[in-house]
Length: 256
Image (cartoon, rainbow, N blue to C red; front, side, top):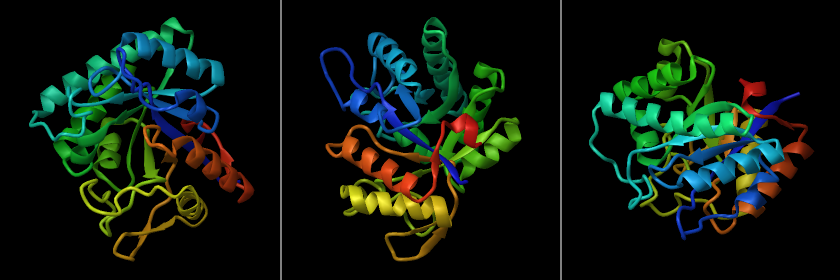
């Protein structure tokens, strides 16, 4: 039986500002990437989100980012590899402490936004993130990153497990990178269309690029973004269609 993880970016509220329906999304996913205060989230939100995940039996990951609350971590900030390493260790350590306080464990680490996009193509940054995951987690946590990217090679060099990720609601370029959000068609809003793409990724290892080419990869995890209006419906429809196709939904540690 084919197994696949469904992940979502959660805990992105902070202070008096609320983003997403975390409780609604948690009913459909098997892993959660929790913001660690750099692009979103705060200590109280981190604590509540970890508790919610533990309550729902959803595995937990640290969603690390550049320090960019104003830009939601989507601005490409010029940072050295050493700075990226330090940013990641800091955020992983904070979320790991909340996991321990709630009697659970940190399963994985996933970079967010601009850090994710740059490190997918920048070997030095990918190495810094992989080293941070290894050093902060004792080699136990999984690094999640874009399929067929520098993340995979960096994980191998660091001696840690890697999880190839694909996106339900993002369009792909023919080179395997995500279509920039500034371009029309970058984000898919139709839940049925997104779910059909995911089923094909899981069962055939293929997805069509925005240019019409076939991209070959078989992801370990599918990201269901939690900050869009259709997030809960998309996650529900996608899970249902995967299960109907004979795919078992499982947390990342059971897939990689």
